[in-house]
Length: 374
Ligand SMILES: Cc1ncc(COP(=O)(O)O)c(C=O)c1O
Image 1 (cartoon, helix red, strand yellow):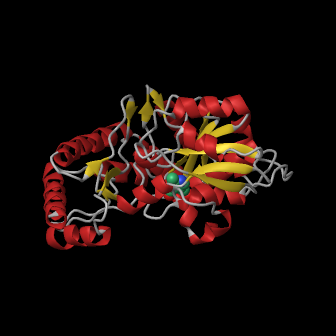
Image 2: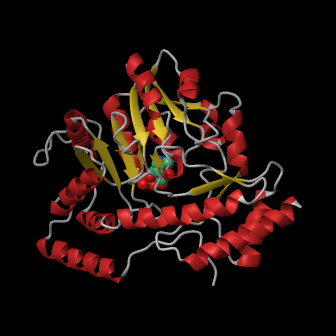
Image 3: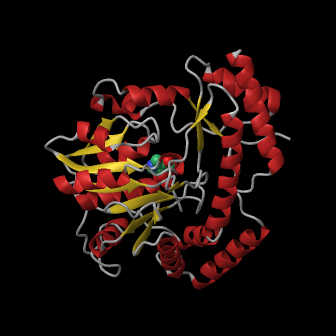
């Protein structure tokens, strides 16, 4: 039996709970912005120790809404070079200009120094991405830097459901945080996103934006340039059921990560991205760096063909400033990001991974590493 790159886990109880919820929703006809959405928001906020949550149609929508709420039109927004396209896409759709900054090799995230190097007089916001679920210990220094300059800190927490640093959860460090419920994420609603914030003003604005910029649910007065960014009740039901598993899934993923840590510590040259002290990652991704010069495509092919182990997609193989569509925003070399994007691999982590599967991955990675390095 092979080990797939990702596995989406809805056990029989959860499938039954979703089916019951769908029957209830269809029989009431309350299909969008109803009680399931409200319950999902409340549960997600409580899970993260946040005051307000606003459910939306995707993580990208959550980011664009937050950037519109900050007001980035014709302003600069600092984004890390190591992130998904949507982080920069949301800036552009909100009318801003992405300024791509280098990352810290220890966390693949922005640091206070890389943010500072990317600031301009027109900077309106900084988007901090918690890559693979890991929250950088620099988060407080970045927040202070932003506060001192009147710049909004927005978290792209698309990877980081339930992750924490110093006991504080992802999504609670800046003005607001944006989460994704895309299928591969630790918690999914099929498609969907969530905003967390301590600010009732941001919450109210986000509610307006997600529903076509309408001033209130019952009127046709459009006061903001919003869009159809609502979450349907069906998606909210799936997300609510899955969210109940967050703690259990995170524990399982952390168990897998600790086994990978031990295995990689015994391999010369193949290094895990260590979990910083104080950080508790959800291990959405387990990132490791190949030695310089290793052919990543061949490494992945051999673990797959010889051992049936599919490595999951990198986070990310091409840095943002080298994405073709962002060519107009390219501003020179970003050496750390270029190096880590070229060398990283992600070992498969499933929320229900068995010890046998972990053994299989460890054996595959160790054997191929030894063969290619030797
Ligand atoms: C870092 C990051 N930001 C934003 C997004 C966008 O989320 P969505 O696909 O839900 O729009 C994703 C994921 O898919 C992501 O990984």
